[in-house]
Length: 480
Image (cartoon, rainbow, N blue to C red):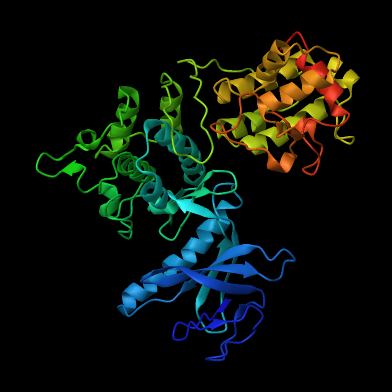
């Protein structure tokens, strides 16, 4: 089907039509983007699921059309500015794995503004709540662990989202990652305009007090995220979770057979403090608070994939000296791991190890390269993975599992296959492809990462080929 974008028509045409049979409007935007169905509509525009016919695979995308209903001239002008600013904000943020990528922004032949961006297939958290019921503490901690690094990133780019709520967080179907969407309310904050009163925007149930006065700051997003957590824990409107007479949050009394530990409750309470100075001041500060708390037992959840328990990080995680006998800079690897960007960190691990072994051109390591690999570099890489994964990932984690299975420096097919089964590199007696690896702290098996060195490219099967013998040598090293 090809949906006509003319607001006065919206006729359903055949998938190959170039012009609408009813009104004659052109169906393809920029000769490539075809609307398939309406997936959202508001006072200032419509959102369509679409396909990009310029690419052979015809991938899905999203078309946002600025089409305001009757409003005052000033309101329309401001809405048009916000629509344009959404495109500017998405463009300024570049490509981030948990933010929809901007493909195009333009004015169509019909004179309307259009924005085309990446399509995220999956349910938003409002839909997930309705379908699966309230979140437990484990799912809330999972939510925080995924959304906070995104906020840390956009805040580092001087962008405030200003509309954090369940509807704007989508669990991507392909990998269960949480994606932050809808930057239509986002604001760029510079030192020159930080103190200026801006537009009052956001969703009333989740908006921070200062944002309601046009004074949004980074901590305003943290407040909205905290309120989002309360709603998902209880299924009760945030308006009802707040006692206006006593001027305080009463969310705990709405928990029904859904306990929340004191540590997690205190973190949520600090997120929703009314005074901005009493709140956490940055996303990284909240992440730190989450890391140093004692891990909790995780009851059965309704997430599509099973969740593994979080391994608690020591209360004062030791700082790691980024030592290298080969002069390798490990700061980028540490930054990726700190942000929990596991796939990028996995690829960076392969890059720095190939550099240290002077095998960048060949893109794989021989047994002799592993045997001669500098102890300082191997320990630095391993310690970074162990620290930022809370003990779930790292070469030493893999080595322990491998040795417990009876693995040695000599390759043994039966042990190697069992090892692959144990850490998720083999599924149903078949080695998985690198493109099928799940890069997630919560759903990946313990020891699943790093794994990029086991596949030179995404089309190569993980754990297979000549790299098996090199891997056996690596996992048998005494310094792991």
